[in-house]
Length: 189
Length: 252
Image 1: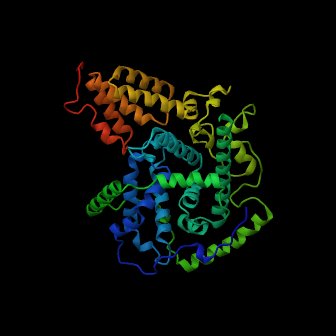
Image 2: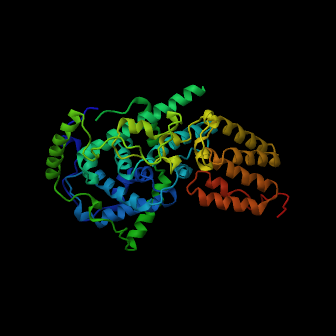
Image 3: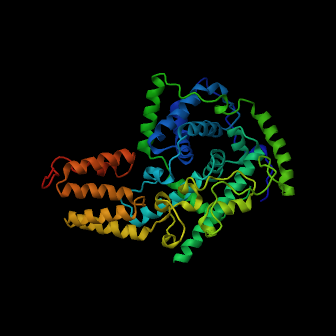
């Protein structure tokens, strides 16, 4: 797997300016859905997910002084979300327990569609649940949310080489798991 | 960084697309956030690093570039990663016995690829392994592997059989045959205790109970459903089960 050199463009920039306090409403409007997805995929239980989202923004508001306006606020929030998630899911639940609302279909969806989507999410949940918290964070950030490795390294305060290493391992493991799943399905069909 | 292969990426795209925050729920979260903030809630205390680095971006980018330059060397040489112990290939705790089919274990493939990496914990959390997700696999029912009950429940899945059962139960309910519906749903519970359509089963079962006059039982089931499946899209339908005026042939 080739390693791309990190460039400054790999790390999204902030606006360079900073208000005296975080505007909770505006920030939530821009990044609430992102934080919600990240927390869910980092394993926060559905029952506490809403609280966890709120906590990310409360902490962001409290720690606004530490935010560098030159940096990506998305990455900054991801770093906070990762800590909040760790705080929330010490007792990790089995993957299927998180499925209840993880993939709610529209009421009109057919049973086939419902089953297929739940099966796909269950598969990914199962994979994520098998990762340790560090690998899970980089896989979610990179492969589901599209963050770059340098952005993740900044967000997590991690060594870039470590981030690349974790990504390489988890990507390969995921591809292999998907391939095995396909083989099983092909044998059955 | 290389891209995922198309099949793997498609899987993740589906998850991401389906993981959207519904506007109503977003509004509820924001409302709660504003209330907590107004009440002086500062959020939980986290380690000092939780907000990310306060170092200037320029310094961070330089550090990132420097780290990347160093990182490229071991990758180019194909050597081990920096966070990986130098000693190779220790069989991970909980790895599967050699007699098992390779594709049944989530771990060996990862071990083969990265023998010295940190590894997912396999055996103690069966559902946590990649292959443990409920892949449709009737073949798994026949394998000679010894499993505990939870493992079996997590692995064995037959979506088409589930769909048929739930569909028959729903049809029976629609036709006014609640007794037959309940029997079919009970069968689903036995055969697919952790199936893909558990929510549909629970709500339909409560409805059948109600139709059979088991009002209190139906309400208990709905209460449990709302507790176990918070935020379910079926919640509204569930709360309507055995609402006033729906009670038929009361027996409890």
